[in-house]
Amino acid sequence: MLRFSLFGVPVSIHFSFLLVAAFGLPVYRGWGIAAWTVAVFVAVLLHESGHAFTARAFGASPVSITLFAFGGFTSWSNSRDLGPGRRFVISAAGSAVGIAAGLAVIGIGRMGLLADLPDLALVFLQSFVWAGLVWGILNWIPILPLDGGHMLQHALEAIVPKRAPSIARVVSVIAGVVVVAVAWRYEQRFLAIFVAMITFMGLREGRSERPPAHPPQERTGGESPDQEPPAFPI
Image (tube, rainbow, N blue to C red):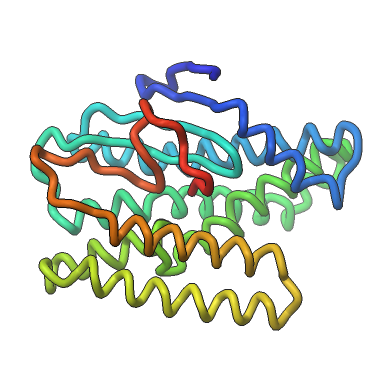
């Protein structure tokens, strides 16, 4: 596992992150695969940095980022009580950063400033936009354990704190079924299967929750960095 620090936030990269290269195979070859993989790495790291630096700005410590398999997760612990409003913002920040970066690249492209770039650079930017913008939007769908599922639960915690987890799970299942049905209808088989497994994982994790014996470690899309990463990262 590769480790480094990003402005004081520890970052770990699991060897399984290289599996993202496989998703570029239907479209790219040779160096195009490398450009795709690097672009996804940058986009996912940017997404997780949005979570990490927002959490740190709200006083959470320690904060860490782990990248693995097809994505990543941010782990953070409360240094003081964070209300549902701030937890909502932390959950939303990752996709917000990715969407903003993707829109910025699109805007620069429409201004004609990218027309003379080499083909490999264009592959990188196109891949970055897909990984940052498209995945950022999908991540806001209210399905646990996607960011949208956490955002919904935190919003509910401000209204009905005791029922928030159970309501969020019900909405998560309904949203998951709808997305799977639509994806299957439009022959997006991989997306349908992926969302189905994500939805099942969120339901299973919700049912296995137990009241903590000590102040909990807050997480966005994953487990503690000291544990093996889950099969489907966010």
